[in-house]
Length: 222
Image 1 (tube, rainbow, N blue to C red):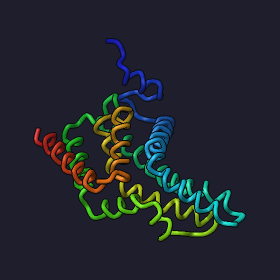
Image 2 (cartoon, rainbow, N blue to C red):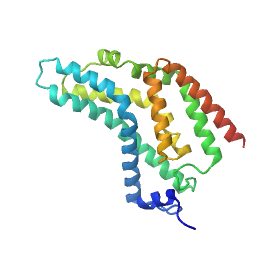
Image 3 (cartoon, rainbow, N blue to C red):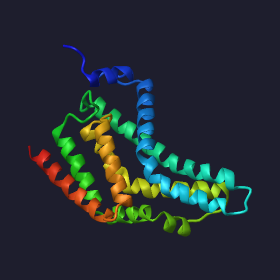
Image 4 (cartoon, one colour):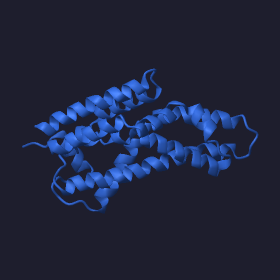
């Protein structure tokens, strides 16, 4: 049997299905998740970063130059931490032989539970609160302003926490559709942007949650 594209991709990353991971596998997986999270979240973080940069540029402050990258670094730290957690989750699935060559869970039950969990979270007050903060970059900056580079880092970190609170459950869907499925990565990215910046973001979020619950229930019932 000739190797599939997924098998080739796994081999290129140094990973072999059904064999225990080593430190190198964990590192490669962490790098993969980190690059993917930065790529997915960059567009949604851009408005607040540009707005912050413009506000800092109007100030007569020698700390203006390092403050903007400090804000970005604070945001980045949050998603690197999430990438580490996602790496451990992927490792756990692999060790239990629940991960396919496409890096999606091979268990219908696990896939269904992930969908239901993500769907239910979409309807929670915490999701709504985090989404509201992400939908208003100016409101966030005005209510969380801190001076200096350290203050900028704190602001970026705090915004990253709200962004994580808004999107973490959606990111777990990659374990259902395939971690390296670029088409679904694009779909999720567009959904996140529609939630945060679309005119009916809250409605999109809740509708998405209902769809996920329904799909999950179908898989669990199989």
